[in-house]
Length: 247
Length: 132
Image 1 (cartoon, rainbow over the protein chains, first blue to last red):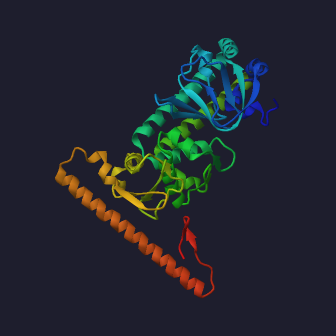
Image 2: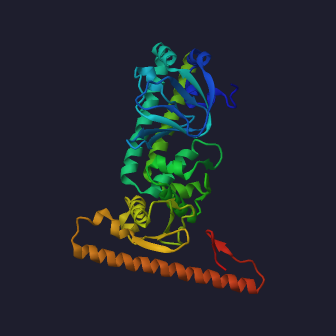
Image 3: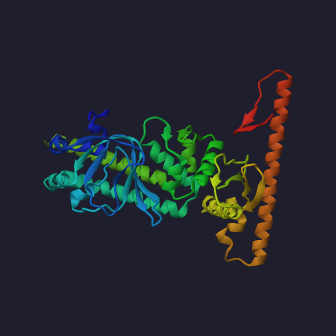
Protein backbone atom coordinates (compact mmCIF):
# COMPACT_ATOMS: atom_id res chain seq x y z
CA UNK A 1 0.00 0.00 0.00
CA UNK A 2 1.09 3.61 -0.54
CA UNK A 3 1.86 5.19 2.82
CA UNK A 4 0.74 8.76 3.53
CA UNK A 5 3.95 9.41 5.48
CA UNK A 6 7.58 8.47 4.70
CA UNK A 7 9.10 5.65 6.75
CA UNK A 8 11.55 8.11 8.24
CA UNK A 9 8.59 9.45 10.25
CA UNK A 10 9.52 6.63 12.59
CA UNK A 11 12.32 7.92 14.84
CA UNK A 12 14.12 4.57 15.05
CA UNK A 13 14.14 4.03 11.29
CA UNK A 14 15.17 7.63 10.84
CA UNK A 15 18.12 7.07 13.19
CA UNK A 16 19.46 4.08 11.24
CA UNK A 17 22.37 4.54 8.89
CA UNK A 18 21.31 4.26 5.22
CA UNK A 19 23.14 0.93 4.89
CA UNK A 20 21.17 -0.58 7.80
CA UNK A 21 17.88 0.90 6.59
CA UNK A 22 18.53 -0.60 3.15
CA UNK A 23 18.64 -4.06 4.74
CA UNK A 24 15.14 -3.63 6.17
CA UNK A 25 13.25 -1.63 3.55
CA UNK A 26 12.83 -4.41 0.91
CA UNK A 27 11.02 -6.52 3.52
CA UNK A 28 8.66 -3.82 4.81
CA UNK A 29 4.94 -4.07 4.20
CA UNK A 30 2.97 -0.86 4.58
CA UNK A 31 -0.17 -1.24 6.62
CA UNK A 32 -2.98 0.80 8.14
CA UNK A 33 -4.35 -0.15 11.54
CA UNK A 34 -7.69 0.59 13.15
CA UNK A 35 -8.70 1.36 16.72
CA UNK A 36 -9.14 -1.83 18.72
CA UNK A 37 -7.00 -3.95 16.40
CA UNK A 38 -4.75 -6.37 18.27
CA UNK A 39 -1.38 -6.52 16.54
CA UNK A 40 0.35 -8.69 19.10
CA UNK A 41 -1.10 -11.16 21.56
CA UNK A 42 0.38 -11.91 24.99
CA UNK A 43 2.17 -15.27 25.28
CA UNK A 44 1.75 -15.85 21.54
CA UNK A 45 4.65 -16.03 19.07
CA UNK A 46 5.61 -12.66 17.62
CA UNK A 47 4.95 -12.84 13.89
CA UNK A 48 5.51 -9.22 12.85
CA UNK A 49 7.68 -6.37 14.02
CA UNK A 50 5.79 -3.07 13.69
CA UNK A 51 7.26 0.37 13.18
CA UNK A 52 4.42 2.91 13.60
CA UNK A 53 4.56 6.01 11.41
CA UNK A 54 1.45 7.57 12.95
CA UNK A 55 -1.21 6.66 15.51
CA UNK A 56 -0.59 5.00 18.85
CA UNK A 57 -0.40 1.46 20.17
CA UNK A 58 -0.92 0.54 23.81
CA UNK A 59 1.00 -2.32 25.36
CA UNK A 60 -0.97 -3.91 28.14
CA UNK A 61 -1.27 -6.76 30.56
CA UNK A 62 -4.35 -8.92 30.08
CA UNK A 63 -6.16 -9.75 33.31
CA UNK A 64 -8.05 -12.99 34.03
CA UNK A 65 -11.33 -11.14 33.39
CA UNK A 66 -10.11 -10.36 29.87
CA UNK A 67 -9.57 -6.63 30.30
CA UNK A 68 -6.29 -5.02 29.27
CA UNK A 69 -4.47 -2.58 31.56
CA UNK A 70 -2.03 -0.30 29.80
CA UNK A 71 1.62 -0.41 30.82
CA UNK A 72 3.21 1.61 28.03
CA UNK A 73 2.33 3.35 24.77
CA UNK A 74 4.22 3.36 21.49
CA UNK A 75 3.91 5.82 18.63
CA UNK A 76 6.16 6.87 15.79
CA UNK A 77 9.07 7.13 18.23
CA UNK A 78 9.26 3.37 18.74
CA UNK A 79 8.65 -0.18 17.64
CA UNK A 80 6.45 -3.09 18.70
CA UNK A 81 7.68 -6.66 18.78
CA UNK A 82 11.34 -5.87 18.18
CA UNK A 83 12.64 -7.87 21.12
CA UNK A 84 12.37 -10.77 18.71
CA UNK A 85 15.43 -9.26 17.05
CA UNK A 86 17.34 -10.09 20.19
CA UNK A 87 16.13 -13.64 20.55
CA UNK A 88 12.77 -13.63 22.39
CA UNK A 89 10.07 -15.24 20.28
CA UNK A 90 7.02 -14.81 22.51
CA UNK A 91 5.28 -11.56 23.37
CA UNK A 92 5.01 -10.60 27.02
CA UNK A 93 2.03 -8.32 26.56
CA UNK A 94 -0.85 -7.55 24.22
CA UNK A 95 -0.46 -4.66 21.77
CA UNK A 96 -3.70 -2.89 20.83
CA UNK A 97 -4.17 0.07 18.51
CA UNK A 98 -5.75 2.97 20.43
CA UNK A 99 -5.23 5.75 17.87
CA UNK A 100 -5.60 4.73 14.25
CA UNK A 101 -2.65 5.24 11.95
CA UNK A 102 -0.13 3.73 9.56
CA UNK A 103 3.05 1.80 9.91
CA UNK A 104 5.40 -0.65 8.33
CA UNK A 105 5.72 -4.26 9.39
CA UNK A 106 8.40 -6.85 8.75
CA UNK A 107 8.31 -10.58 9.38
CA UNK A 108 9.73 -11.29 12.82
CA UNK A 109 12.00 -14.06 11.54
CA UNK A 110 13.35 -11.81 8.78
CA UNK A 111 13.94 -9.00 11.28
CA UNK A 112 15.78 -11.41 13.54
CA UNK A 113 18.06 -12.48 10.69
CA UNK A 114 18.84 -8.89 9.74
CA UNK A 115 19.36 -7.75 13.34
CA UNK A 116 21.64 -10.75 13.86
CA UNK A 117 23.95 -9.38 11.21
CA UNK A 118 23.82 -5.71 12.22
CA UNK A 119 25.22 -4.56 15.53
CA UNK A 120 23.80 -1.05 15.13
CA UNK A 121 20.22 -2.36 14.67
CA UNK A 122 20.66 -4.62 17.71
CA UNK A 123 21.99 -1.73 19.79
CA UNK A 124 19.17 0.57 18.70
CA UNK A 125 16.52 -2.00 19.64
CA UNK A 126 18.23 -2.72 22.96
CA UNK A 127 18.46 0.96 23.84
CA UNK A 128 14.84 1.55 22.85
CA UNK A 129 13.78 -1.40 25.03
CA UNK A 130 15.43 0.35 27.99
CA UNK A 131 13.33 3.46 27.31
CA UNK A 132 10.18 1.35 26.95
CA UNK A 133 10.99 -0.53 30.16
CA UNK A 134 11.49 2.72 32.03
CA UNK A 135 8.11 3.93 30.71
CA UNK A 136 6.47 0.71 31.95
CA UNK A 137 8.18 1.07 35.35
CA UNK A 138 7.07 4.68 35.67
CA UNK A 139 3.51 3.75 34.64
CA UNK A 140 3.45 0.98 37.27
CA UNK A 141 4.57 3.45 39.94
CA UNK A 142 2.00 5.97 38.68
CA UNK A 143 -0.83 3.43 38.84
CA UNK A 144 0.13 2.58 42.42
CA UNK A 145 0.79 6.07 43.77
CA UNK A 146 -1.28 8.64 41.94
CA UNK A 147 -4.91 9.64 41.68
CA UNK A 148 -7.14 9.09 38.69
CA UNK A 149 -7.17 12.74 37.56
CA UNK A 150 -3.34 12.79 37.62
CA UNK A 151 -3.15 9.52 35.70
CA UNK A 152 -5.71 10.67 33.14
CA UNK A 153 -3.77 13.92 32.62
CA UNK A 154 -0.52 11.96 32.24
CA UNK A 155 -2.14 9.59 29.76
CA UNK A 156 -3.66 12.42 27.70
CA UNK A 157 -0.29 14.19 27.50
CA UNK A 158 1.46 10.99 26.41
CA UNK A 159 -1.19 10.54 23.74
CA UNK A 160 -0.98 14.17 22.65
CA UNK A 161 2.76 13.69 22.04
CA UNK A 162 1.90 10.99 19.52
CA UNK A 163 -0.95 12.51 17.53
CA UNK A 164 -1.28 15.33 15.04
CA UNK A 165 -3.22 18.31 16.37
CA UNK A 166 -4.81 18.73 19.76
CA UNK A 167 -7.68 16.26 19.62
CA UNK A 168 -7.55 12.71 20.92
CA UNK A 169 -10.18 10.54 19.26
CA UNK A 170 -10.94 7.86 21.78
CA UNK A 171 -13.98 6.66 23.70
CA UNK A 172 -14.10 6.99 27.46
CA UNK A 173 -14.82 3.26 27.68
CA UNK A 174 -11.46 2.52 26.08
CA UNK A 175 -9.62 5.08 28.21
CA UNK A 176 -11.24 3.54 31.29
CA UNK A 177 -10.18 0.07 30.22
CA UNK A 178 -6.59 1.20 29.63
CA UNK A 179 -6.41 2.98 32.99
CA UNK A 180 -8.10 0.04 34.74
CA UNK A 181 -11.15 2.00 35.93
CA UNK A 182 -14.84 2.26 35.03
CA UNK A 183 -16.17 4.50 32.26
CA UNK A 184 -18.14 6.54 34.80
CA UNK A 185 -14.95 7.28 36.74
CA UNK A 186 -13.25 8.51 33.55
CA UNK A 187 -16.26 10.74 32.82
CA UNK A 188 -16.08 12.26 36.31
CA UNK A 189 -12.29 12.77 36.13
CA UNK A 190 -12.59 14.25 32.61
CA UNK A 191 -15.29 16.65 33.82
CA UNK A 192 -12.96 17.78 36.62
CA UNK A 193 -10.35 18.65 33.98
CA UNK A 194 -12.99 20.29 31.80
CA UNK A 195 -14.13 22.51 34.68
CA UNK A 196 -10.58 23.79 34.90
CA UNK A 197 -10.80 24.49 31.14
CA UNK A 198 -7.83 22.24 30.39
CA UNK A 199 -9.80 19.96 28.06
CA UNK A 200 -13.12 19.77 26.23
CA UNK A 201 -14.52 16.32 25.97
CA UNK A 202 -17.19 14.63 23.92
CA UNK A 203 -18.41 11.07 23.79
CA UNK A 204 -15.57 9.87 21.56
CA UNK A 205 -13.00 12.64 21.56
CA UNK A 206 -11.08 14.88 23.93
CA UNK A 207 -9.70 18.23 22.82
CA UNK A 208 -6.73 19.58 24.75
CA UNK A 209 -7.28 23.29 25.38
CA UNK A 210 -4.47 24.05 27.82
CA UNK A 211 -1.44 21.77 27.70
CA UNK A 212 0.40 23.60 30.48
CA UNK A 213 -2.66 23.34 32.71
CA UNK A 214 -2.84 19.62 32.03
CA UNK A 215 0.86 19.30 32.89
CA UNK A 216 0.18 21.04 36.20
CA UNK A 217 -2.40 18.37 37.07
CA UNK A 218 -0.34 15.42 35.84
CA UNK A 219 2.01 13.80 38.30
CA UNK A 220 5.80 13.91 37.89
CA UNK A 221 5.59 10.62 35.97
CA UNK A 222 4.80 12.36 32.69
CA UNK A 223 7.81 14.68 33.00
CA UNK A 224 10.06 11.66 33.79
CA UNK A 225 8.82 9.63 30.83
CA UNK A 226 9.03 12.63 28.51
CA UNK A 227 12.57 13.47 29.64
CA UNK A 228 13.82 9.92 29.03
CA UNK A 229 12.20 9.78 25.60
CA UNK A 230 13.67 13.15 24.66
CA UNK A 231 17.14 12.10 25.89
CA UNK A 232 16.88 8.90 23.87
CA UNK A 233 15.74 10.75 20.73
CA UNK A 234 18.65 13.16 21.12
CA UNK A 235 21.11 10.30 21.68
CA UNK A 236 20.06 8.33 18.60
CA UNK A 237 20.06 11.51 16.53
CA UNK A 238 23.66 12.17 17.62
CA UNK A 239 24.74 8.58 16.96
CA UNK A 240 23.35 8.86 13.42
CA UNK A 241 25.34 12.03 12.82
CA UNK A 242 28.44 10.25 14.15
CA UNK A 243 27.96 7.13 12.00
CA UNK A 244 27.25 9.24 8.90
CA UNK A 245 30.41 11.26 9.54
CA UNK A 246 32.49 8.08 9.94
CA UNK A 247 31.17 6.49 6.78
CA UNK B 1 -32.20 -3.88 32.94
CA UNK B 2 -32.80 -0.50 34.63
CA UNK B 3 -30.32 2.33 34.12
CA UNK B 4 -28.89 4.18 37.11
CA UNK B 5 -27.16 7.57 37.17
CA UNK B 6 -24.37 8.62 39.51
CA UNK B 7 -24.40 12.35 40.15
CA UNK B 8 -21.18 13.51 41.77
CA UNK B 9 -20.97 16.39 44.22
CA UNK B 10 -17.30 17.30 44.49
CA UNK B 11 -15.85 20.72 45.30
CA UNK B 12 -17.66 22.69 42.59
CA UNK B 13 -20.65 22.40 40.29
CA UNK B 14 -22.35 19.02 40.24
CA UNK B 15 -20.73 16.53 37.86
CA UNK B 16 -23.53 14.87 35.95
CA UNK B 17 -23.60 11.36 34.59
CA UNK B 18 -25.44 11.70 31.28
CA UNK B 19 -25.05 8.13 30.05
CA UNK B 20 -25.88 6.07 33.14
CA UNK B 21 -25.11 2.42 33.79
CA UNK B 22 -27.42 -0.57 33.36
CA UNK B 23 -27.52 -2.60 36.58
CA UNK B 24 -29.88 -5.26 37.97
CA UNK B 25 -31.31 -3.26 40.90
CA UNK B 26 -30.81 -0.40 43.37
CA UNK B 27 -28.63 -2.53 45.61
CA UNK B 28 -26.24 -3.24 42.70
CA UNK B 29 -26.27 0.50 41.91
CA UNK B 30 -25.15 1.27 45.47
CA UNK B 31 -22.34 -1.30 45.17
CA UNK B 32 -21.33 0.30 41.87
CA UNK B 33 -21.25 3.72 43.55
CA UNK B 34 -18.93 2.30 46.24
CA UNK B 35 -16.54 0.98 43.55
CA UNK B 36 -16.63 4.28 41.65
CA UNK B 37 -15.97 6.24 44.84
CA UNK B 38 -12.94 4.07 45.62
CA UNK B 39 -11.58 4.60 42.09
CA UNK B 40 -12.04 8.37 42.28
CA UNK B 41 -10.64 8.83 45.77
CA UNK B 42 -7.66 6.45 45.53
CA UNK B 43 -4.41 8.19 46.53
CA UNK B 44 -6.22 11.44 47.38
CA UNK B 45 -8.51 10.20 50.15
CA UNK B 46 -7.96 13.16 52.46
CA UNK B 47 -9.06 15.61 49.75
CA UNK B 48 -12.12 13.69 48.59
CA UNK B 49 -13.74 12.28 51.76
CA UNK B 50 -16.47 14.91 51.60
CA UNK B 51 -17.44 14.09 48.00
CA UNK B 52 -20.83 12.49 47.55
CA UNK B 53 -22.67 10.41 44.98
CA UNK B 54 -26.40 10.80 44.49
CA UNK B 55 -27.72 7.59 42.94
CA UNK B 56 -30.75 8.27 40.75
CA UNK B 57 -33.01 6.22 38.50
CA UNK B 58 -33.91 7.14 34.92
CA UNK B 59 -36.79 9.36 36.17
CA UNK B 60 -34.25 11.36 38.20
CA UNK B 61 -35.64 10.02 41.49
CA UNK B 62 -32.98 10.03 44.21
CA UNK B 63 -32.59 6.44 45.43
CA UNK B 64 -29.67 6.76 47.84
CA UNK B 65 -26.54 8.75 48.57
CA UNK B 66 -22.99 7.73 49.32
CA UNK B 67 -20.53 9.95 51.17
CA UNK B 68 -17.01 8.95 50.09
CA UNK B 69 -15.79 8.87 53.70
CA UNK B 70 -17.92 5.74 54.19
CA UNK B 71 -15.72 3.76 51.78
CA UNK B 72 -12.38 5.36 52.66
CA UNK B 73 -9.99 2.44 53.23
CA UNK B 74 -7.39 4.65 54.92
CA UNK B 75 -9.71 4.98 57.94
CA UNK B 76 -10.00 1.23 58.47
CA UNK B 77 -7.32 1.07 61.16
CA UNK B 78 -8.80 3.90 63.23
CA UNK B 79 -11.05 3.56 66.27
CA UNK B 80 -14.79 4.14 65.94
CA UNK B 81 -14.62 7.48 67.79
CA UNK B 82 -12.01 8.91 65.40
CA UNK B 83 -13.87 7.54 62.37
CA UNK B 84 -17.04 9.14 63.65
CA UNK B 85 -15.29 12.50 63.99
CA UNK B 86 -13.86 12.25 60.47
CA UNK B 87 -17.28 11.33 59.12
CA UNK B 88 -18.94 14.26 60.86
CA UNK B 89 -16.38 16.74 59.53
CA UNK B 90 -16.76 15.24 56.03
CA UNK B 91 -20.53 15.71 56.24
CA UNK B 92 -20.02 19.33 57.25
CA UNK B 93 -17.55 19.92 54.41
CA UNK B 94 -19.96 18.32 51.95
CA UNK B 95 -22.80 20.57 53.17
CA UNK B 96 -20.51 23.62 53.01
CA UNK B 97 -19.42 22.79 49.44
CA UNK B 98 -23.06 22.45 48.35
CA UNK B 99 -24.01 25.72 50.06
CA UNK B 100 -21.11 27.58 48.43
CA UNK B 101 -22.09 26.18 45.05
CA UNK B 102 -25.73 27.20 45.62
CA UNK B 103 -24.54 30.73 46.49
CA UNK B 104 -22.40 30.87 43.36
CA UNK B 105 -25.35 29.75 41.24
CA UNK B 106 -27.57 32.41 42.83
CA UNK B 107 -25.00 35.13 42.09
CA UNK B 108 -24.73 33.96 38.46
CA UNK B 109 -28.50 33.89 38.10
CA UNK B 110 -28.87 37.37 39.63
CA UNK B 111 -26.25 38.77 37.27
CA UNK B 112 -27.98 37.12 34.31
CA UNK B 113 -31.39 38.52 35.27
CA UNK B 114 -29.92 42.01 35.73
CA UNK B 115 -28.10 41.82 32.39
CA UNK B 116 -31.26 40.63 30.63
CA UNK B 117 -33.22 43.52 32.08
CA UNK B 118 -30.68 45.91 30.57
CA UNK B 119 -30.65 44.06 27.26
CA UNK B 120 -27.06 42.96 27.68
CA UNK B 121 -25.59 39.49 27.01
CA UNK B 122 -25.68 37.06 29.93
CA UNK B 123 -24.59 33.55 30.86
CA UNK B 124 -27.63 31.38 30.14
CA UNK B 125 -26.07 27.98 30.87
CA UNK B 126 -22.91 26.61 32.41
CA UNK B 127 -21.52 23.06 32.17
CA UNK B 128 -24.75 21.90 30.56
CA UNK B 129 -27.02 23.44 33.24
CA UNK B 130 -29.37 26.34 32.61
CA UNK B 131 -28.70 29.27 34.92
CA UNK B 132 -31.70 31.36 33.95
